[in-house]
Image (cartoon, rainbow, N blue to C red; front, top):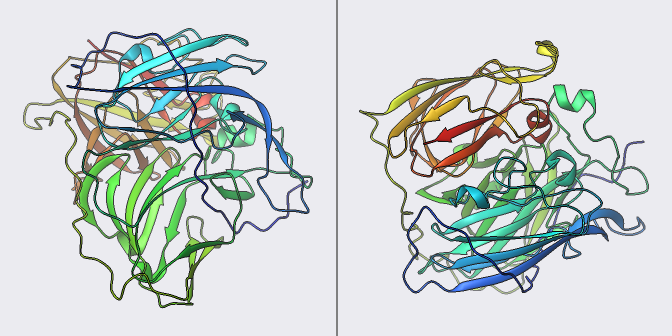
Amino acid sequence: MSFNYKTTVTRRAFVASSLAGVMSATLPFPRMAEAATRKFSLRAAPGSTRLVPEPHPDTAAWCYNGKVPGPEIRIRQGDRLQVEVMNDLAEETTVHWHGIRLPNAMDGVPHLTQGPIAPGDRFVYEFDALDAGTFWYHPHQRSFEQVGRGLYGPLIIDEANPPRVDRDVTWVLDDWRLAEDASISDDFGNAHDLSHAGRLGNTVTINGHVPETLEVASGERIRLRLINAANARIFALDFGDHAPRIIALDGQPVTPHEPRDGVVVLGPAMRVDVILDCTGKPGERAQLVDRAYRGNDFRVLDFTYAETALREATPDWPIALPASPIAEPDLSSAHRHEVTFTGGMMGMMHDGRGIWFVNGKAAQGHVLDPFLTLKRDASHILEMTNATAFDHPIHLHGHSFRVISRNGAPTPHREWQDTVLMAPRERVEIAFVADNPGDWMFHCHILEHQAAGMMGVIRVA
């Protein structure tokens, strides 16, 4: 049965992180001077959480440290992060640190970069925080179900001198397919989700809850960090008259700008940092609306203004972020590579064993021969074509890349990203320096598409 609780959405709730950890790894990057080692622990285990308000019961979920989302891990750029992960699930798991440039052995891909963490076992991840920004963590083992049951959390790396704001707020967005009793539907990996748009839910949450309001004050400036942890849902958030300005995409700084048509779009796994100036009057209410799916707009929450203004006018503090230490690709000498994505409901079982394909091959598990080998420390351009009828957020592990063109037109901001949302029939060019050696996953982050073949390995050697 479908869950009929209204799909208005969400609230934020900060969660404290915990301690512990050991062990180390050899890095391909130099250690940063005077880096502090920050230790945390994560325990993956069954639990319960209140996704929807009473009279509905709690929802059985899979949790990190008993919470959905897991604890917000927060460190400073240049710190060394050490996280001991304990697996108290009844199946294997891993943790992938999404968007982080780290050593291959710490990337969390089962059977490719590490052996999966067995039930009752543990693994210690350790790496330096090279880039400031908004990142997140989640399993790469049966991720279509483990993420779908609640295993994910935010990873925030603060700049040495972050822009001045009144509040720094993290929103982890997700959607859930719930039954009438608020339980998670057990139909993970069904044929329709695998071959169509992925697992779309019927209940949207922010930080694991379905709230009604966000309280703000006139003149307040908020840095809002948006993380899309959904299996498949695309968000298109319309802030109305608030006119947010985007300052980072996928954790990486971008020239501050207003989003097209005032709508902030996030495909699965993507992150967007916005500066939100609260321009309403004391006592007013304003809606945040999601417009991602035509004919299915819904109210996410209301901004409710306090009766007393924080200040008479919004501040004019600088908002641009410092650049990350990422090597700039040389487009004039870059090696070019064609990548084509095919498949879907019309291409099911095209070769007898897959639904989605990268350059004509459907992945079976994570142990794959590389479909591309890139010369290390050279510049490369991937000319990617989405030859399907569906959107695909394409994610490359271990690197950030510049999005340099869409359908032959240069992008206005040449943004750094690690996950680029491709529309049906769209052609996108990305460029990067392949400076992180190893075998790296490259896949669609609609997790059902990944499970059904849209995944490959890019080797940097």
